[in-house]
Image (cartoon, rainbow over the protein chains, first blue to last red):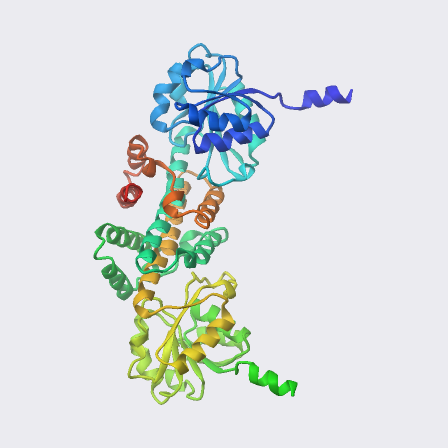
Length: 271
Length: 271
Protein backbone atom coordinates (compact mmCIF):
# COMPACT_ATOMS: atom_id res chain seq x y z
CA UNK A 1 0.00 0.00 0.00
CA UNK A 2 1.38 3.35 -1.09
CA UNK A 3 0.73 5.11 2.19
CA UNK A 4 2.43 2.39 4.21
CA UNK A 5 5.47 2.37 1.90
CA UNK A 6 5.87 6.14 2.21
CA UNK A 7 5.59 5.85 5.94
CA UNK A 8 8.35 3.27 6.07
CA UNK A 9 10.68 5.21 3.77
CA UNK A 10 10.28 8.53 5.49
CA UNK A 11 12.72 9.11 8.34
CA UNK A 12 10.80 9.29 11.57
CA UNK A 13 10.11 12.82 12.80
CA UNK A 14 11.71 13.41 16.15
CA UNK A 15 10.81 15.31 19.25
CA UNK A 16 13.59 17.85 19.54
CA UNK A 17 14.51 20.25 22.37
CA UNK A 18 16.75 23.24 21.68
CA UNK A 19 19.11 24.22 24.49
CA UNK A 20 20.20 27.80 23.74
CA UNK A 21 18.58 30.56 21.67
CA UNK A 22 21.54 32.48 20.25
CA UNK A 23 22.39 33.06 16.58
CA UNK A 24 23.43 29.51 15.80
CA UNK A 25 20.57 27.95 17.81
CA UNK A 26 18.09 30.19 15.99
CA UNK A 27 19.25 29.33 12.47
CA UNK A 28 19.70 25.61 13.18
CA UNK A 29 16.47 25.38 15.20
CA UNK A 30 14.47 26.93 12.36
CA UNK A 31 16.08 24.54 9.86
CA UNK A 32 15.23 21.53 12.06
CA UNK A 33 11.66 22.80 12.41
CA UNK A 34 11.42 23.35 8.65
CA UNK A 35 12.58 19.74 8.13
CA UNK A 36 9.38 18.63 9.84
CA UNK A 37 10.56 17.75 13.32
CA UNK A 38 8.54 18.51 16.40
CA UNK A 39 10.44 21.14 18.37
CA UNK A 40 8.80 20.81 21.77
CA UNK A 41 10.84 23.22 23.93
CA UNK A 42 13.42 26.00 23.69
CA UNK A 43 15.57 26.63 26.75
CA UNK A 44 17.46 29.86 27.32
CA UNK A 45 18.69 31.50 30.52
CA UNK A 46 16.43 34.44 29.75
CA UNK A 47 12.73 33.91 29.09
CA UNK A 48 12.84 36.69 26.49
CA UNK A 49 15.36 34.85 24.28
CA UNK A 50 13.64 31.51 24.81
CA UNK A 51 10.30 33.02 23.80
CA UNK A 52 11.69 34.74 20.70
CA UNK A 53 12.94 31.47 19.22
CA UNK A 54 10.15 29.27 20.64
CA UNK A 55 7.55 31.40 18.86
CA UNK A 56 9.25 30.75 15.54
CA UNK A 57 9.34 26.97 15.89
CA UNK A 58 6.04 26.38 17.72
CA UNK A 59 7.74 25.32 20.96
CA UNK A 60 7.30 25.99 24.66
CA UNK A 61 9.87 28.45 26.05
CA UNK A 62 11.61 27.59 29.33
CA UNK A 63 14.29 29.40 31.30
CA UNK A 64 14.81 26.92 34.15
CA UNK A 65 16.89 23.93 33.11
CA UNK A 66 14.88 21.68 35.49
CA UNK A 67 11.79 22.42 33.37
CA UNK A 68 13.34 20.75 30.33
CA UNK A 69 11.27 17.68 29.48
CA UNK A 70 12.90 14.26 29.53
CA UNK A 71 10.73 12.67 26.81
CA UNK A 72 12.39 14.18 23.69
CA UNK A 73 14.39 12.09 21.23
CA UNK A 74 17.14 14.65 20.58
CA UNK A 75 18.63 17.50 22.65
CA UNK A 76 20.49 20.13 20.61
CA UNK A 77 22.93 22.09 22.79
CA UNK A 78 23.94 25.46 21.27
CA UNK A 79 25.19 27.57 24.13
CA UNK A 80 28.40 29.55 24.67
CA UNK A 81 31.45 27.33 24.94
CA UNK A 82 32.07 28.65 28.44
CA UNK A 83 28.58 27.56 29.61
CA UNK A 84 28.50 24.08 28.09
CA UNK A 85 30.58 22.19 30.66
CA UNK A 86 28.45 23.31 33.60
CA UNK A 87 25.19 22.83 31.77
CA UNK A 88 25.62 19.29 30.45
CA UNK A 89 25.53 17.31 33.74
CA UNK A 90 22.36 19.12 34.85
CA UNK A 91 20.74 18.73 31.43
CA UNK A 92 21.53 15.05 30.93
CA UNK A 93 20.38 13.91 34.35
CA UNK A 94 17.36 11.63 34.05
CA UNK A 95 17.65 11.60 30.24
CA UNK A 96 20.68 9.31 29.94
CA UNK A 97 19.16 7.14 27.18
CA UNK A 98 18.32 10.06 24.86
CA UNK A 99 20.54 11.45 22.09
CA UNK A 100 22.49 14.65 22.77
CA UNK A 101 24.50 16.80 20.41
CA UNK A 102 26.38 20.05 20.69
CA UNK A 103 27.23 22.45 17.86
CA UNK A 104 30.59 23.91 18.96
CA UNK A 105 33.67 23.87 16.76
CA UNK A 106 36.24 23.69 19.51
CA UNK A 107 34.60 21.44 22.12
CA UNK A 108 35.31 17.71 21.92
CA UNK A 109 32.46 15.26 21.67
CA UNK A 110 33.61 13.66 24.92
CA UNK A 111 32.22 16.51 26.96
CA UNK A 112 29.13 14.24 27.11
CA UNK A 113 31.08 11.18 28.27
CA UNK A 114 29.65 9.66 31.45
CA UNK A 115 26.67 12.00 31.24
CA UNK A 116 24.75 10.28 28.43
CA UNK A 117 24.88 7.03 26.48
CA UNK A 118 24.34 8.37 22.95
CA UNK A 119 25.88 11.64 21.89
CA UNK A 120 27.73 13.52 19.20
CA UNK A 121 28.37 16.80 17.44
CA UNK A 122 26.77 18.71 14.57
CA UNK A 123 28.96 21.73 13.79
CA UNK A 124 27.46 24.01 11.12
CA UNK A 125 30.40 26.08 9.90
CA UNK A 126 28.98 29.51 9.19
CA UNK A 127 29.02 33.02 10.64
CA UNK A 128 25.47 33.54 11.89
CA UNK A 129 23.89 36.93 12.55
CA UNK A 130 20.28 37.24 13.61
CA UNK A 131 19.76 40.04 11.05
CA UNK A 132 20.67 37.86 8.06
CA UNK A 133 18.79 34.95 6.53
CA UNK A 134 21.04 32.11 5.43
CA UNK A 135 20.38 29.17 3.13
CA UNK A 136 21.07 26.44 5.66
CA UNK A 137 21.16 23.76 2.94
CA UNK A 138 24.45 25.23 1.68
CA UNK A 139 26.19 25.29 5.05
CA UNK A 140 28.86 22.61 5.53
CA UNK A 141 27.90 20.55 8.60
CA UNK A 142 30.53 18.42 10.35
CA UNK A 143 29.22 15.53 12.40
CA UNK A 144 30.50 12.79 14.66
CA UNK A 145 28.89 10.46 17.16
CA UNK A 146 29.93 8.01 19.86
CA UNK A 147 27.81 5.10 18.59
CA UNK A 148 25.60 3.88 15.73
CA UNK A 149 22.36 4.99 17.38
CA UNK A 150 23.55 8.58 17.86
CA UNK A 151 25.14 8.64 14.39
CA UNK A 152 21.87 7.56 12.82
CA UNK A 153 19.83 10.33 14.43
CA UNK A 154 22.46 13.07 14.10
CA UNK A 155 23.22 12.02 10.52
CA UNK A 156 19.51 12.07 9.62
CA UNK A 157 19.03 15.57 11.00
CA UNK A 158 22.24 16.82 9.38
CA UNK A 159 21.25 15.50 5.93
CA UNK A 160 17.77 16.98 6.31
CA UNK A 161 19.05 20.49 7.04
CA UNK A 162 22.15 20.58 4.81
CA UNK A 163 23.33 19.11 1.53
CA UNK A 164 26.97 19.32 2.66
CA UNK A 165 27.50 16.85 5.50
CA UNK A 166 30.97 15.62 6.44
CA UNK A 167 32.21 13.26 9.13
CA UNK A 168 35.00 14.80 11.18
CA UNK A 169 36.52 13.72 14.49
CA UNK A 170 36.88 16.18 17.38
CA UNK A 171 40.67 16.22 17.02
CA UNK A 172 40.42 17.55 13.45
CA UNK A 173 37.33 19.69 14.08
CA UNK A 174 39.24 21.98 16.41
CA UNK A 175 41.70 22.74 13.60
CA UNK A 176 38.79 23.29 11.22
CA UNK A 177 37.37 25.80 13.71
CA UNK A 178 40.75 27.53 14.05
CA UNK A 179 40.96 27.71 10.27
CA UNK A 180 37.46 29.24 10.16
CA UNK A 181 38.55 31.92 12.65
CA UNK A 182 41.22 32.96 10.14
CA UNK A 183 38.95 32.76 7.06
CA UNK A 184 35.99 34.50 8.69
CA UNK A 185 36.61 36.40 11.94
CA UNK A 186 40.06 37.70 11.01
CA UNK A 187 38.92 38.45 7.47
CA UNK A 188 35.97 40.41 8.83
CA UNK A 189 38.32 42.26 11.16
CA UNK A 190 40.46 43.26 8.17
CA UNK A 191 37.27 44.69 6.64
CA UNK A 192 36.63 46.55 9.91
CA UNK A 193 40.15 48.03 9.98
CA UNK A 194 39.82 48.99 6.31
CA UNK A 195 36.62 50.79 7.16
CA UNK A 196 38.26 52.60 10.08
CA UNK A 197 40.95 53.99 7.77
CA UNK A 198 38.41 55.07 5.14
CA UNK A 199 36.16 56.75 7.72
CA UNK A 200 39.01 58.90 8.97
CA UNK A 201 39.36 60.21 5.42
CA UNK A 202 35.68 60.61 4.65
CA UNK A 203 35.60 57.82 2.05
CA UNK A 204 32.50 55.55 2.13
CA UNK A 205 33.17 51.85 2.79
CA UNK A 206 30.95 50.96 -0.21
CA UNK A 207 33.82 51.68 -2.62
CA UNK A 208 35.61 48.66 -1.14
CA UNK A 209 32.85 46.13 -1.91
CA UNK A 210 33.85 45.19 -5.50
CA UNK A 211 37.39 44.51 -4.25
CA UNK A 212 36.08 42.47 -1.31
CA UNK A 213 33.84 40.42 -3.61
CA UNK A 214 36.58 39.76 -6.14
CA UNK A 215 39.03 38.76 -3.41
CA UNK A 216 36.52 36.17 -2.16
CA UNK A 217 35.59 35.05 -5.69
CA UNK A 218 39.22 34.53 -6.69
CA UNK A 219 39.86 31.77 -4.14
CA UNK A 220 37.08 29.68 -5.68
CA UNK A 221 39.46 29.26 -8.62
CA UNK A 222 42.97 29.97 -7.36
CA UNK A 223 44.99 28.83 -4.36
CA UNK A 224 45.04 31.95 -2.12
CA UNK A 225 48.82 31.86 -2.27
CA UNK A 226 48.66 32.22 -6.08
CA UNK A 227 45.91 34.83 -5.86
CA UNK A 228 47.93 37.21 -3.69
CA UNK A 229 48.68 40.70 -5.04
CA UNK A 230 49.84 43.98 -3.51
CA UNK A 231 53.00 45.49 -2.04
CA UNK A 232 53.89 42.73 0.46
CA UNK A 233 53.97 39.85 -2.04
CA UNK A 234 55.92 42.03 -4.52
CA UNK A 235 58.10 43.02 -1.54
CA UNK A 236 57.83 46.63 -2.66
CA UNK A 237 59.79 48.16 0.22
CA UNK A 238 58.99 51.76 -0.75
CA UNK A 239 55.26 51.18 -0.48
CA UNK A 240 55.61 49.06 2.66
CA UNK A 241 57.62 51.79 4.37
CA UNK A 242 55.31 54.58 3.20
CA UNK A 243 52.16 52.70 4.29
CA UNK A 244 53.73 51.86 7.65
CA UNK A 245 54.37 55.58 8.13
CA UNK A 246 50.68 56.37 7.51
CA UNK A 247 49.85 54.22 10.55
CA UNK A 248 52.30 55.80 12.96
CA UNK A 249 49.47 57.29 15.05
CA UNK A 250 47.94 53.82 15.50
CA UNK A 251 50.65 51.46 16.81
CA UNK A 252 48.30 48.46 17.09
CA UNK A 253 47.22 48.69 13.45
CA UNK A 254 50.83 49.34 12.39
CA UNK A 255 51.82 46.20 14.22
CA UNK A 256 49.19 44.14 12.37
CA UNK A 257 50.29 45.74 9.10
CA UNK A 258 53.94 44.81 9.64
CA UNK A 259 53.29 41.27 10.80
CA UNK A 260 50.79 40.48 8.05
CA UNK A 261 53.13 41.93 5.40
CA UNK A 262 56.04 39.88 6.74
CA UNK A 263 53.90 36.74 6.85
CA UNK A 264 52.70 37.31 3.25
CA UNK A 265 56.27 37.69 2.08
CA UNK A 266 57.43 34.64 4.02
CA UNK A 267 54.63 32.45 2.61
CA UNK A 268 55.35 33.64 -0.94
CA UNK A 269 58.97 32.47 -0.77
CA UNK A 270 58.12 29.17 1.00
CA UNK A 271 59.35 26.04 -0.85
CA UNK B 1 23.46 66.43 -40.60
CA UNK B 2 23.22 63.28 -38.54
CA UNK B 3 26.72 62.09 -39.25
CA UNK B 4 28.19 65.44 -38.31
CA UNK B 5 26.15 65.60 -35.12
CA UNK B 6 27.25 62.13 -34.12
CA UNK B 7 30.83 63.03 -34.82
CA UNK B 8 30.62 66.08 -32.61
CA UNK B 9 28.91 64.25 -29.74
CA UNK B 10 31.23 61.28 -29.72
CA UNK B 11 34.32 61.70 -27.58
CA UNK B 12 37.34 61.69 -29.84
CA UNK B 13 39.20 58.40 -29.95
CA UNK B 14 42.72 58.85 -28.73
CA UNK B 15 46.07 57.42 -29.63
CA UNK B 16 47.14 55.66 -26.46
CA UNK B 17 50.49 54.13 -25.48
CA UNK B 18 50.68 51.63 -22.63
CA UNK B 19 53.82 51.75 -20.52
CA UNK B 20 53.97 48.43 -18.67
CA UNK B 21 52.42 45.05 -19.43
CA UNK B 22 51.71 43.56 -16.00
CA UNK B 23 48.35 42.48 -14.57
CA UNK B 24 46.91 45.96 -14.15
CA UNK B 25 48.28 47.21 -17.49
CA UNK B 26 46.77 44.18 -19.22
CA UNK B 27 43.26 44.56 -17.80
CA UNK B 28 43.18 48.36 -18.17
CA UNK B 29 44.80 48.27 -21.63
CA UNK B 30 42.21 45.79 -22.88
CA UNK B 31 39.40 47.95 -21.47
CA UNK B 32 40.81 51.07 -23.18
CA UNK B 33 41.11 49.14 -26.44
CA UNK B 34 37.55 47.84 -26.07
CA UNK B 35 36.36 51.43 -25.57
CA UNK B 36 37.52 52.13 -29.14
CA UNK B 37 40.81 53.90 -28.62
CA UNK B 38 43.79 53.31 -30.84
CA UNK B 39 46.44 51.60 -28.71
CA UNK B 40 49.51 52.21 -30.83
CA UNK B 41 52.32 50.80 -28.69
CA UNK B 42 52.92 48.66 -25.61
CA UNK B 43 56.22 49.13 -23.80
CA UNK B 44 57.66 46.56 -21.40
CA UNK B 45 61.22 45.88 -20.31
CA UNK B 46 60.92 42.43 -21.85
CA UNK B 47 59.83 41.99 -25.45
CA UNK B 48 57.92 38.85 -24.47
CA UNK B 49 55.60 40.74 -22.08
CA UNK B 50 55.24 43.66 -24.49
CA UNK B 51 54.28 41.29 -27.30
CA UNK B 52 51.78 39.34 -25.18
CA UNK B 53 49.73 42.45 -24.40
CA UNK B 54 50.38 44.23 -27.73
CA UNK B 55 48.90 41.28 -29.62
CA UNK B 56 45.65 41.62 -27.64
CA UNK B 57 45.20 45.31 -28.35
CA UNK B 58 46.54 45.53 -31.90
CA UNK B 59 49.61 47.52 -30.89
CA UNK B 60 53.31 47.51 -31.67
CA UNK B 61 55.41 45.99 -28.87
CA UNK B 62 58.58 47.84 -27.81
CA UNK B 63 61.14 47.07 -25.11
CA UNK B 64 63.42 50.11 -25.49
CA UNK B 65 61.94 53.23 -23.90
CA UNK B 66 63.57 55.39 -26.60
CA UNK B 67 61.40 53.58 -29.17
CA UNK B 68 58.22 54.93 -27.58
CA UNK B 69 56.54 57.24 -30.09
CA UNK B 70 56.00 60.88 -29.19
CA UNK B 71 52.80 61.38 -31.22
CA UNK B 72 50.28 59.71 -28.90
CA UNK B 73 47.60 61.66 -27.03
CA UNK B 74 47.77 59.70 -23.80
CA UNK B 75 50.53 57.73 -22.06
CA UNK B 76 49.29 55.21 -19.48
CA UNK B 77 52.05 54.30 -17.01
CA UNK B 78 51.39 51.00 -15.16
CA UNK B 79 54.75 49.81 -13.92
CA UNK B 80 55.99 48.73 -10.49
CA UNK B 81 56.04 51.56 -7.99
CA UNK B 82 59.79 51.14 -7.60
CA UNK B 83 60.37 51.63 -11.36
CA UNK B 84 58.13 54.63 -11.91
CA UNK B 85 60.42 57.40 -10.60
CA UNK B 86 63.32 56.42 -12.84
CA UNK B 87 61.14 55.80 -15.85
CA UNK B 88 59.13 59.03 -15.95
CA UNK B 89 61.88 61.55 -16.88
CA UNK B 90 63.08 59.35 -19.75
CA UNK B 91 59.53 58.69 -20.94
CA UNK B 92 58.31 62.29 -20.83
CA UNK B 93 61.30 63.80 -22.64
CA UNK B 94 60.21 65.28 -25.99
CA UNK B 95 56.53 64.61 -25.19
CA UNK B 96 56.01 67.40 -22.64
CA UNK B 97 52.74 68.62 -24.17
CA UNK B 98 51.04 65.19 -24.11
CA UNK B 99 48.84 63.80 -21.31
CA UNK B 100 50.38 61.30 -18.88
CA UNK B 101 48.73 59.24 -16.19
CA UNK B 102 49.87 56.58 -13.77
CA UNK B 103 47.73 53.93 -12.10
CA UNK B 104 49.41 53.49 -8.71
CA UNK B 105 47.52 53.77 -5.43
CA UNK B 106 50.40 55.04 -3.33
CA UNK B 107 52.30 57.34 -5.71
CA UNK B 108 51.35 61.03 -5.72
CA UNK B 109 50.32 62.70 -8.94
CA UNK B 110 53.24 65.11 -8.57
CA UNK B 111 55.70 62.46 -9.64
CA UNK B 112 55.11 63.99 -13.11
CA UNK B 113 55.74 67.59 -11.96
CA UNK B 114 58.37 69.33 -14.07
CA UNK B 115 58.42 66.40 -16.50
CA UNK B 116 55.15 67.08 -18.31
CA UNK B 117 52.53 69.82 -18.53
CA UNK B 118 49.34 67.73 -18.34
CA UNK B 119 49.17 64.74 -16.06
CA UNK B 120 47.12 62.84 -13.54
CA UNK B 121 46.18 59.50 -12.04
CA UNK B 122 43.67 56.76 -12.84
CA UNK B 123 43.75 54.21 -10.02
CA UNK B 124 41.51 51.19 -10.68
CA UNK B 125 41.04 49.61 -7.26
CA UNK B 126 40.96 45.88 -7.88
CA UNK B 127 43.13 42.80 -7.35
CA UNK B 128 44.16 41.77 -10.85
CA UNK B 129 45.39 38.33 -11.81
CA UNK B 130 46.19 37.42 -15.40
CA UNK B 131 44.25 34.16 -15.01
CA UNK B 132 40.96 35.86 -14.17
CA UNK B 133 38.70 37.95 -16.37
CA UNK B 134 37.20 40.94 -14.60
CA UNK B 135 34.26 43.16 -15.51
CA UNK B 136 36.18 46.41 -15.70
CA UNK B 137 32.96 48.46 -15.78
CA UNK B 138 32.32 47.52 -12.13
CA UNK B 139 35.78 48.52 -10.87
CA UNK B 140 35.90 51.75 -8.85
CA UNK B 141 38.36 54.10 -10.59
CA UNK B 142 39.83 57.04 -8.69
CA UNK B 143 41.07 59.93 -10.80
CA UNK B 144 42.80 63.27 -10.39
CA UNK B 145 44.59 65.63 -12.75
CA UNK B 146 46.77 68.74 -12.58
CA UNK B 147 44.71 70.80 -15.04
CA UNK B 148 41.48 70.89 -17.03
CA UNK B 149 43.03 69.45 -20.18
CA UNK B 150 44.38 66.39 -18.37
CA UNK B 151 41.18 66.00 -16.36
CA UNK B 152 39.11 66.03 -19.56
CA UNK B 153 41.10 63.24 -21.20
CA UNK B 154 41.60 61.13 -18.07
CA UNK B 155 37.97 61.61 -17.06
CA UNK B 156 36.77 60.57 -20.53
CA UNK B 157 38.82 57.38 -20.49
CA UNK B 158 37.80 56.58 -16.90
CA UNK B 159 34.08 56.95 -17.67
CA UNK B 160 34.45 54.85 -20.83
CA UNK B 161 36.05 51.92 -18.99
CA UNK B 162 34.17 52.08 -15.67
CA UNK B 163 30.76 53.11 -14.39
CA UNK B 164 32.21 53.92 -10.96
CA UNK B 165 34.50 56.93 -11.30
CA UNK B 166 35.45 59.06 -8.29
CA UNK B 167 37.67 62.13 -7.90
CA UNK B 168 40.25 61.66 -5.17
CA UNK B 169 43.37 63.67 -4.35
CA UNK B 170 46.74 61.96 -3.88
CA UNK B 171 46.73 62.67 -0.14
CA UNK B 172 43.52 60.65 0.35
CA UNK B 173 44.33 58.06 -2.31
CA UNK B 174 47.26 56.74 -0.31
CA UNK B 175 44.88 56.01 2.59
CA UNK B 176 42.44 54.38 0.18
CA UNK B 177 45.28 52.15 -1.03
CA UNK B 178 46.27 51.30 2.54
CA UNK B 179 42.67 50.45 3.28
CA UNK B 180 42.58 48.20 0.20
CA UNK B 181 45.66 46.35 1.46
CA UNK B 182 43.69 45.45 4.59
CA UNK B 183 40.45 44.55 2.74
CA UNK B 184 42.15 42.56 -0.02
CA UNK B 185 45.78 41.51 0.55
CA UNK B 186 45.45 40.84 4.28
CA UNK B 187 42.07 39.18 3.77
CA UNK B 188 43.56 36.94 1.10
CA UNK B 189 46.43 36.12 3.44
CA UNK B 190 43.94 35.06 6.11
CA UNK B 191 42.49 32.70 3.48
CA UNK B 192 46.01 31.42 2.79
CA UNK B 193 46.72 30.78 6.49
CA UNK B 194 43.33 29.08 6.84
CA UNK B 195 44.26 26.81 3.96
CA UNK B 196 47.64 26.01 5.51
CA UNK B 197 45.93 24.82 8.70
CA UNK B 198 43.40 22.72 6.79
CA UNK B 199 46.06 21.13 4.58
CA UNK B 200 48.01 19.93 7.61
CA UNK B 201 44.88 18.05 8.67
CA UNK B 202 43.89 16.72 5.26
CA UNK B 203 40.74 18.87 4.99
CA UNK B 204 40.06 20.37 1.53
CA UNK B 205 39.94 24.19 1.39
CA UNK B 206 36.64 23.97 -0.54
CA UNK B 207 34.72 23.43 2.69
CA UNK B 208 35.64 27.00 3.67
CA UNK B 209 34.09 28.68 0.59
CA UNK B 210 30.50 29.09 1.86
CA UNK B 211 31.86 30.76 5.00
CA UNK B 212 34.17 33.00 2.95
CA UNK B 213 31.29 34.02 0.68
CA UNK B 214 28.92 34.76 3.54
CA UNK B 215 31.58 36.78 5.37
CA UNK B 216 32.02 38.97 2.27
CA UNK B 217 28.25 39.14 1.60
CA UNK B 218 27.48 40.24 5.17
CA UNK B 219 29.42 43.50 4.92
CA UNK B 220 27.23 44.59 2.01
CA UNK B 221 24.50 44.95 4.64
CA UNK B 222 26.18 45.29 8.01
CA UNK B 223 29.02 47.41 9.36
CA UNK B 224 31.88 44.87 9.72
CA UNK B 225 32.05 45.73 13.41
CA UNK B 226 28.42 44.63 13.81
CA UNK B 227 28.96 41.57 11.61
CA UNK B 228 31.76 40.16 13.76
CA UNK B 229 31.28 36.71 15.33
CA UNK B 230 33.59 34.11 16.87
CA UNK B 231 35.61 33.66 20.06
CA UNK B 232 37.51 36.98 20.06
CA UNK B 233 34.47 39.26 19.92
CA UNK B 234 32.70 37.10 22.54
CA UNK B 235 35.99 37.22 24.48
CA UNK B 236 35.68 33.50 25.06
CA UNK B 237 38.98 33.02 26.88
CA UNK B 238 38.76 29.22 26.94
CA UNK B 239 38.57 29.02 23.14
CA UNK B 240 41.19 31.74 22.66
CA UNK B 241 43.61 29.89 24.92
CA UNK B 242 42.89 26.49 23.36
CA UNK B 243 43.26 27.83 19.80
CA UNK B 244 46.48 29.62 20.72
CA UNK B 245 47.83 26.30 22.01
CA UNK B 246 47.06 24.62 18.64
CA UNK B 247 49.48 27.09 17.02
CA UNK B 248 52.39 26.59 19.39
CA UNK B 249 54.50 24.96 16.67
CA UNK B 250 54.03 28.04 14.45
CA UNK B 251 55.03 31.14 16.45
CA UNK B 252 54.43 33.54 13.55
CA UNK B 253 50.86 32.37 13.03
CA UNK B 254 50.29 32.33 16.80
CA UNK B 255 51.47 35.91 16.90
CA UNK B 256 48.98 36.95 14.20
CA UNK B 257 46.26 35.01 16.02
CA UNK B 258 46.91 36.81 19.31
CA UNK B 259 47.20 40.28 17.84
CA UNK B 260 44.13 39.95 15.63
CA UNK B 261 42.08 38.56 18.53
CA UNK B 262 43.19 41.41 20.79
CA UNK B 263 42.42 43.96 18.08
CA UNK B 264 38.93 42.46 17.49
CA UNK B 265 38.20 42.64 21.20
CA UNK B 266 39.52 46.20 21.46
CA UNK B 267 37.43 47.41 18.51
CA UNK B 268 34.30 45.73 19.92
CA UNK B 269 34.52 47.67 23.19
CA UNK B 270 35.44 50.98 21.46
CA UNK B 271 33.06 53.90 22.25
